[in-house]
Image 1 (cartoon, rainbow, N blue to C red):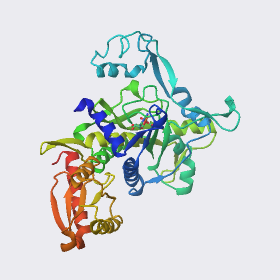
Image 2: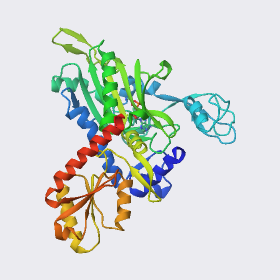
Image 3: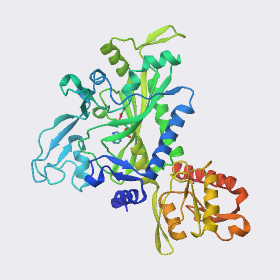
Image 4: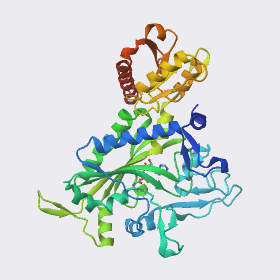
Length: 459
Ligand code: GAP
């Protein structure tokens, strides 16, 4: 299944309304996607759970939102104009494809060739020497399209937090260590995008800059690596057996970092970065202080010292988590001679937690089912569905990862009870309507425990 798993997921996403190619009726736009009704629910769950864990439940982190468009001096100072580049090579043989030089070995391996084979991974043709290609999208501010008006779409949200460092310190009177977090769109003109939504040109970043005293950075880097690993497994339900933590080799480090570790996932197309946790030292604050002439140091009243803080940055793409959850949750099993597709999603990320399904379309069932759905909505993410046979509806809910389905049948009219069906075991229990909400809460708790046990390997 591994080889065509991505294709199966792409088709499920399109069919069920998770992900559509952008501007599809015009042939799409490479590496840009739109998110459908279920995709939006999944995105919001990921985004909200990140925010809850990184900001709301912490004593030491504030959230901000900064703009996509910034003064171009920001990107000159940060080093992005100079160094946010990838080495690009072109095939001059039959296929004329363009590659990232640092991806050539992996691309050859993916095509069953030796990683150090000469020539183009696709056709074996000759390759040009590498040229550096800047990944930032350019645009113009105001009506005149000249170099004085040229600005960039941000390739990371981090710089918005660095340039607001003094504003946040002054308005919150934070002491070190503390963090500034934000979520927002980022744009990168990737040379070799692909693998569905793995590498996009427009995506959403979720980043946190954790400012600390120089010297405490290594320990905090370890702390954040562990904390983010915990989050992906326990809160997103990603199986630890499919993850690894890998420290960057020197030549891989970004221009701003002295140490970076990636949490990587074993995707069907190989190991890939899920999240990066970087020690950015005092690079960004120092360089912005130098370029802007503003003081971005920090005065530590306890020790009477003034210094430029170091920063640890956990940074992850929302769509990277999205594809990881789908790949990790996708399962096929044989049930009564048929293949059942199930997304074994953690119940807190599943787009729908409780489906409400009347057994038939007759008003005597649809009316109470609608009422039940409306009541449950206050507590759970629900979906009402009365189309097709009950078997097909269960099948659809399994495919979109809904942990629980409530079925309203003709007996309900007599016994004031409904059936709860559980996604993974397909077990059904009859529950009085008066107990439905607590029963669903209990079942979701059990489902959470199973998701964590599955993710951490403790089941
Ligand atoms: N501020 C640090 C930074 O941006 P990065 O490693 O370039 O670091 C952070 O990106 C995370 O953003 C990655 O770990 C990945 O999850 C996600 N990401 C990066 N480029 C992406 C792309 N082209 N499409 C989707 N997600 C991307």
